[in-house]
Length: 361
Image (tube, rainbow, N blue to C red; front, side):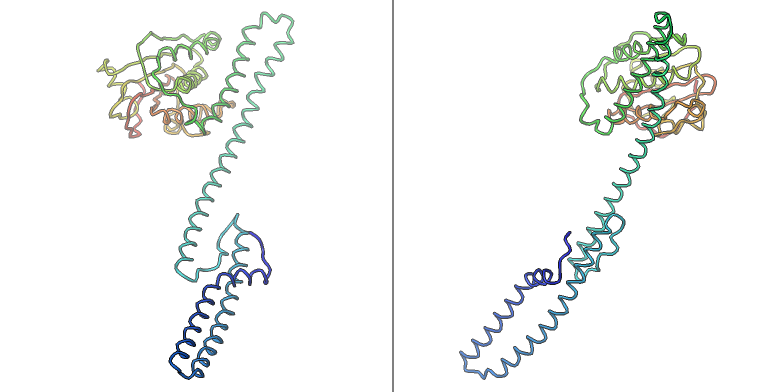
């Protein structure tokens, strides 16, 4: 907004009032013409016009002063628009009041959007700061392994560290894509077993290194989803299970409505679900999750007791899982018991949850 001089402001004001001045001259001309037509004495008419002109001039002068104050007030408001709009002049009529209300609503929406963007910026900065420290660990480990005399003996360890680097890089990419996920979804019929099998294969090194057994039987399951994003969710859950399972096993089980008794039992496991076509259960025999942490594990940045014990935890993985599944039209729940393990359940179909947490069997 440009700050105008008094002369330029007067020109703007004069152009805004020109139509009213023109109407006054037209009315004056009409009175004079009528008086001349009917041979009426012009003296009282001219005197009346002179008085009206004087009063009108006083009003216009006062109006210009108010106009100038409003313009300066709006200019000041423009300079302070980042923080407040309270300096905007008070409206002098109904239409100005409507514009003021609209401007206040727009400013409030803009402030909310700005606050949200700043919050996202801070969260992203915090996440990438942790991410940089995380990715430095496997890179440093790789460097040390490469310095060893017998590199061949360390090939398995090197593959494992390289896989960690790949995981961190992939997590960062998906974190960025989540904000514009709607442009990156390709829905089609997917073979759920193939997606699970590829995810397990990807973590085969981790299974071997930690000597964790896997229980997975072939199943027939077709869901309408995006194969890449659904695979990412399953991989994150597997990663979480492997991370907090020192020994034992991980089981993956799929059930649909054909397994009536078992299926209904699974649906009641963590949430009260009114309808679901099928459910994928991924469970481990790890350290489990504390009961007070369960309702918050899908919150952004929440690491819980386990995360505080594991300094490398960012609290992003399960948050991304929840957000991705919501956008795909699915749902997820978790149940756990400390010392016995954790079970994640992905529901495919329409669900209605009441947030009722139950015990882990």
